[in-house]
View 1 (cartoon, rainbow, N blue to C red):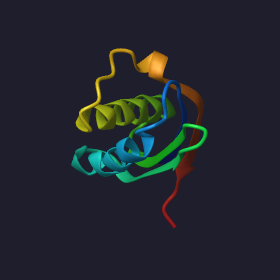
View 2 (cartoon, rainbow, N blue to C red):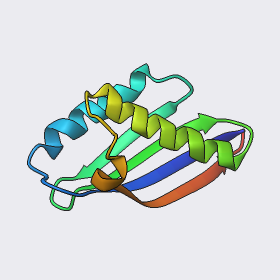
View 3 (tube, rainbow, N blue to C red):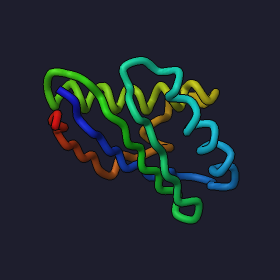
Amino acid sequence: MKYQMLIELQVFGPLDDLDEVSDRLADAPYELHDVIDFDLSTNLKTGRLDVTMIVDVTTLEQALRKTRAATRAAVHATGGAAPDWDQTFREVGTHAHELTDA
């Protein structure tokens, strides 16, 4: 089953280098496996990041786990450390849509 996922993140702290970081973050998922059509939009003024992707899994719970893991892995791939993930990024929403073959 394929799910189109959206994770809405809010960055806390200085936003000075968010433009450069978001550029690197947008390119990182191409090296991740099991993630299709990754996209990132960034609001540089508010620090809001919207991460979308399609994942192919069996259940919605698996889709949520895979999406969160892929997003965190993308942060690591840009050279960012994520031990304080919950202090720097706060998930403000998650949306899922089950995709069907036409």
